[in-house]
Amino acid sequence: MIPTIEWSGQIVRMIDQRKLPAKVDWFICRGYRDVISGIKDMVIRGAPAIGVAAAMGLALGARSIRTASYGVFKDRFRRMADEMLIARPTAVNLRWAIDRMTGIVDSMEGLPVDDIKSAIRKESEAVLAEDIEINRKMGKNGLTLIPKGATILTHCNAGSLATGGYGTALGVIRAAHENGKKIKVIADETRPWLQGLRLTAFELMQDGIDVSVIADNAAGSLMRQKRIELVITGADRIAANGDVANKIGTYQVAVLAKENKIPFYVAAPISTIDPATKNGDMIPVEERAPEEICRIGGKMMGPSGVSAINPVFDITPARYVSAIITEQGVIRPPFQKGIKKVLAGSTLP
Ligand code: MRU
Image (cartoon, rainbow, N blue to C red):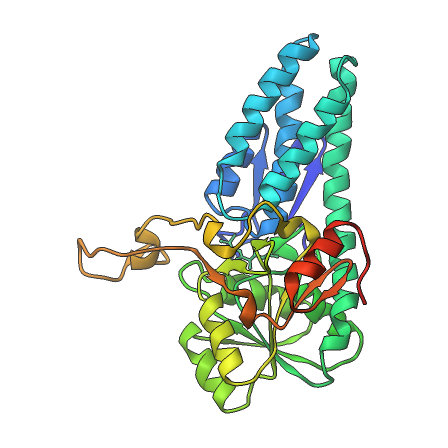
């Protein structure tokens, strides 16, 4: 699998996901504002990948600050971090990564600015490496939930391209495949950006995993016909009570799963859990331009002047979630207790 994002000498490059699968093109970032544009414009997307990009972007930003004064450096770095923070509102991994980078600056108070810049760069490399490691752990932890030969529905892209590598929901699917479970995947196409059709199908086919794409509105019918045994998605933010923000359409999939007595699992790293957000109603849901709904492949499909509403995430209440797969184990309902435990560093079965 091609890397989602990487350092190449002094620049950061990310695969331009808007062009996949037709073209594998690198989007070059020389400064932190290039990274902000990359996040805003969907060059890179997916909660953990956005976090990794923010960490690397701030390392680029730190390098460009010309001062020997710690105070001036900290002040300018903080302003860059504030700019980065508003690139996209829903995925909490963005804030998590930014806090981690500002934490480095705070902890090195009074030390030479050049040393701080090097430490920030190193930290950004660690964020990327750890993310891949975490996804592999999540994959292993999720294995027990996947029966042999299962057909699994997934929504959006929670794969290698949405993370530093390997994926969250697709990480569990990859682990099951590597374990010889002979699973099959059904990918919702995921309108309007088609992450399922363009990215999930692309990734899984590259790995030789059996995948079929469906129109988003076909999932319920396939569940009723018993052609889907379980659902796994990623998450953009998990509230302290287990409510889950994820790609628009996840909520209806979860409700349909419960109606059809199919387990609905969420795979996400601890960095996606936001203890400061009590419940899903408090999660900011991004709304993007209406044109994203009306145009397909750049071509206007609706009547000229038609209005459209484009919320890009939704909230799935915790009661629809069967379990949350993390790098520290599987959290089962009631989630509040398990979430507290993993945040305190405990390992779960
Ligand atoms: O708008 P996107 O493509 O950034 O939305 C991505 C998702 O909703 C993913 O499911 C989520 O970030 C989990 S990715 C491991």
